[in-house]
Image (cartoon, rainbow, N blue to C red; front, top):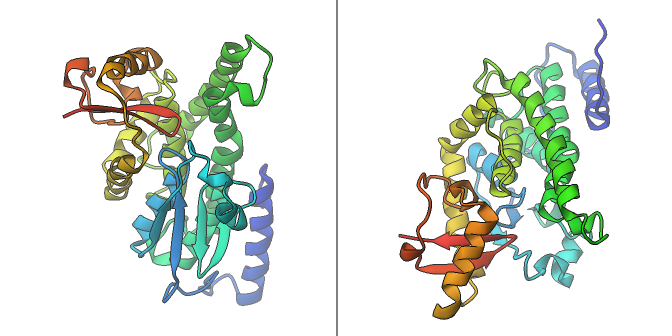
Length: 304
């Protein structure tokens, strides 16, 4: 029997699994990685960033971990302390007994292998490779497009090209979402049960929504998104982000509050999905805003 593997990361994982199966026998249960006992975990996390993914999967695994919040707007990821952990100045970083592991694809495999009872990867070796392929797709196929939408000047500094960069990146991102529609059609999750791949794709779609990408018509993806919002692990990370917002508040004068609120509404094109509280169905009213602050790359309204 022959299989086609199109992703390089999945290919190397296939070779690894193949060697292990030969070594221990295909009918023998084997474990990859260390046992979970006594492992000290520290997750470096930035609100709204893709560090949401390991937060969700670590929570799903039911393990204790410390969270250290990184303020990207203040460029804490460029501090000497953080660069010692990750010279690539990115989150997430998962500190495992003092040793840093970076990149979501690797982090998710470590979590799944270290805590197998959480079933964060499919048990079938072939489906596990497909899950790794989805992770790679989210990380290298969709995430860069999201970054272009968020910061077009970082990929093209020619004056007047920002909207073109955003438009092209949005078109390509929506093409990826349409493919996800086919993968999720008729299913609750990408596989027979929730896996880490669902958390990674959830972040991609959520980030697109926060950037005001119009995802109308993607009913299957939206159903998956709503299903993910119901998971306790996702509710926990959203609650954590709201609490973390206090550490990123910038004091604003009463005279500037209305101006900043109007800027929020202009950025969001008056769509409530841009406001951080995804549960708010009605458009926010300026009259009920208590505090306005800048958090990460987005303006956040704090309303009663």
